[in-house]
Image 1 (tube, helix red, strand yellow):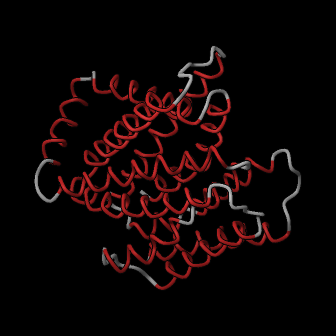
Image 2 (cartoon, rainbow, N blue to C red):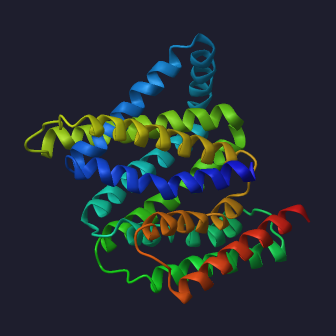
Length: 290
């Protein structure tokens, strides 16, 4: 499950660059609506398989029970607000990598909340590693010339995302993998409905680019998002939320690598931050094995 958590963070580091390219070929609302719309169609195709449809239907019925129903509604509402805030901020940020670093601060908040609210078990070495890795992520943020672009949206995203994941942990813990799959479908469909509605109401003109690369990038972005959500929720079925949160600085490494491909050697402070993140992640892994 730790590997799934790490992989979800790798995809989360790549996703903004793909979606930003889609938005650059259209607009914020049209681009995100198409990405999520394509993803929803892919999920409909998955549900065309009788076995998959049966398991998801059974999980939906289980989610209708109390308190799972309340947990699911609160979690999906948080993810909807977080999704809208995230992409609004992304569209306003001149540098994608900087915005990725800024929004990843939601995981810093989730570590103490997961331990204090969910009463998750922890080890000293694991928590020390989490603190070291998160400090490295913060160092990248504050030495990366983060501007005010998207700051308000990022703050809204952090709060809503915290709500979504805290409650999603309760659902995933109680329902297992079937619950993770159901949360993935529910989150994607709820976000799709939100972005398509906003695009229809606010996007003028509502037109899709004829560039073939637009649909290809949108499809790639949709697949990455679906896998990201699925891996993350699956990891939460057994992995403590604070451990998943401690793995989040990996996103900063991915975004850093993507942004540095054409910018040359990173600064010394950045290399120090990377060393802190890697060392912290190794301590977290060691702490989990104690």
